[in-house]
Length: 511
Image (tube, rainbow, N blue to C red; front, side, top):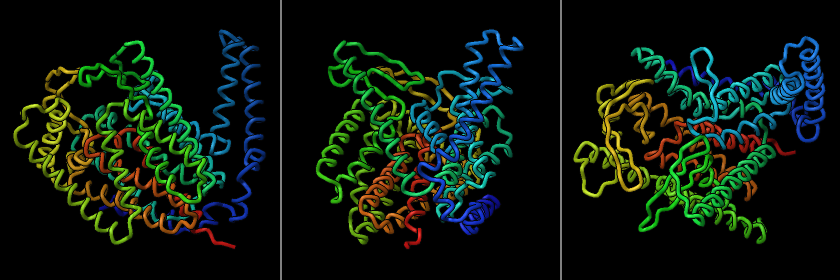
């Protein structure tokens, strides 16, 4: 297929080219641009130039009278120029830190504001993505991009090629343009992988971003627990969904409790798995293990108050994968086969149930709705088995809306579904599912190989935890659509880039 050939060609450019030529610098020269030298050589000149530009803006606004409120608007414009200049031309950690933090704290599809332009409503996360891509382009053109090879690029290209494939398929089937735009604005965040790859190095960057994500997740978890405690103590329960998250009342037995699903709660599960993996490291002191245990308790409590069964399942599956990764190689292979068989049986059972009786007594509204989604996706797949229905395609079914203990039913159009693997199947058919399976499966296989080669036990357990969290999220995607959200695309990019960084440091020649 042309897309497969194109992805292989692009992967070859990254995986087989001479790193010294691609980087525009030798290995010793590349090492010199890290640490304190980064600030002296990159940040200070950028601050000086942007400061001069900001002064010119303030002076021009005051002199010409163009700005209605010279002092305030001039000051805002000056600060804006300095911030944007630092993000675009400064060290990559500035840009990536800003991007990752705002994406973690942002909602899947709601935003505090939107900017209409050219007939499209632009969300802040999309504007930040454009800024990130521009930063990557500047690094590439200035010869500061790190394009060292790794076979993992091929697999990520295959996964990204799936979305290009279904977009072309949707255009071929002449799907409505507004539906195409609405659906493609999430997978474009996969472009973050390419910027991360060329703007990061080895273990130093990897540890920095891991600490950053852990601290942000901890802050969100503690804020969630504080809000839950306030609602419980005050007896105040609300049902609100906004750009901060979902805060819905839940009936638990005789109690009406507040569920708290703040933005970024996906990383609570990742943090638990990674910290639990590090807990078994003999190189870690007992005092640090105690801190890890406390953090695990905090994140487990934050996961509990989400009252989200799919989050519980995702964590449980990730922990099973982590346990399997600690087993000997032979048992790992056997466990993998058993897992594939059980997963296939589960998918088959869900499909048969969806095609059969959906009015089972006692079935909850959310489960009924997801079975209807599975049935509709299978029907679309039967109509377009080879190439899929394409991006922008829809099917009509009954939608179940649950409100505490009651639910309502209404007919609705489904453009996406909770079961991500069914989404892959009905949008891309067998051809698209092949791209996705090779891409995501190849990333996992390459990650397993990288973990085996890491010499440091602590670093190996860190990456083992990330691999378990990644695999658990893939399996849990049978019931939740995280991978199709912007944060899901960024999560995949982060995981893949983390293993690329680990491979770079592992493959570095020892002197």
